[in-house]
Each structure stands twice: as C-alpha cells, then as structure tokens.
Length: 244
Image (cartoon, rainbow, N blue to C red):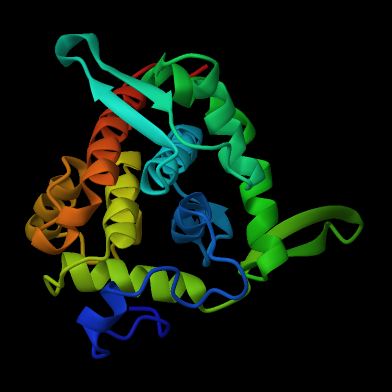
C-alpha cells in the first residue's frame, strides 16, 4: 500500500470533509474526479475511454448540487436535463449550464456535447493548483516530452475519504458519495486496488453509490443523488459503445 494512504486515521472524519486539502476556492467535483483517477506511478489518468463522459457527469452533478440543473427521469425514454437558477460564475460549469439552458436535453446528448473539451482545462486547473505538476523531459537525450507528476497531498485525502466509506463503512459526505459513484461508473475502481481493496464488499458498496443509495446522512442531497444515479447509468452505457 502506498505511504500516502494511512487507514489508521480517523476514517469517519476524513469521509465527512468536502474539498479536503484544497486551498483558495473549493475545487470542482470534476477536478476531484480527475485527480482521483490520476495514477502517480505511471503519470497517466485512468479510464481515458470514458473520461470525458465522467467529467461532464461531474459538472452536471455539481450543477445539481448548486441548484443549477434538474433531471427528469422518463423511464424507458431515458432522462432529460434542464437548467435551473442563474448562470454559474465558474467557466467550466457554464459550459454545461449554457448547453442545457438552450433547451432541455437528453443526458447522453449533454455528456457527448460537453465532455470532449473538458480534459485539458480540468488538467490545467489541477496544475495551477499544484495538485499535479508538468515536468519537461527529454527522450533519447534531445526530444522534449512532458510528464505528469503528483504535486500535492490532496489526492491522498480524496482517496482516503473514499476508502473510509467503501472499506470502513463510514457515512459519506454527499461530495464523496458522488465522487465514488463517478469513479465506479467510469470503470476505474480496479485501478485503485492498491489504495482501495477491490473486493466483493467494495464492489457492492460502490455499485450502491452508482444507483444513488448513499445512506441516511446524505438524504438532504436528494437532487444530487438523483442526478448522479442518472448520469452514472449514462457513463456505464457509454462504456459498452464502440470507440473510434
């Protein structure tokens, strides 16, 4: 197990703190998601095939949490997302809000339209915060290349909070619950097995979060929970589609 994960710490306290380890404005859920999916040993981001769906889903979940989006489930016809409230001040959240503000749209349509442009700006934010570093290296001694390295302890905090919930059965903060649901739906949970054991109980609990079963303490987050359950279903569906 990596040294930055210490399961002996107060698991319940870690799981209850939103945006742990952040400085300045609280990072978006999409930033937390990408940072959690970042693999320090290889400098890569897990679940690249579904990453843009997952990042767009994180924006929608955050909009729902802030009262900026609503979802209407329509049974076999899928679900419709519509804008609510005022236009967000955050530039990334505006990309999703503006799109659904034009007219209510199918969830899959929103994810496919908003997601592809998100990877670079989300990564740039993580670099700007110091959570990830870009290191310029030379291949064969003269060909420049850029490598990504971990730059702060915030990823460890996020993973520790998720582990507390999935392994130690701590009650989650809604933000941690949404993060777990999105990581699980992206198919990346097995990649985290050195930090969060990939066992049958862990799999079962993660799937519960995908379906919106977050426990009693997250009951106040009903809108976010519903949105997350709908969009994680969309991510899972996208994962079985052929990729060009």
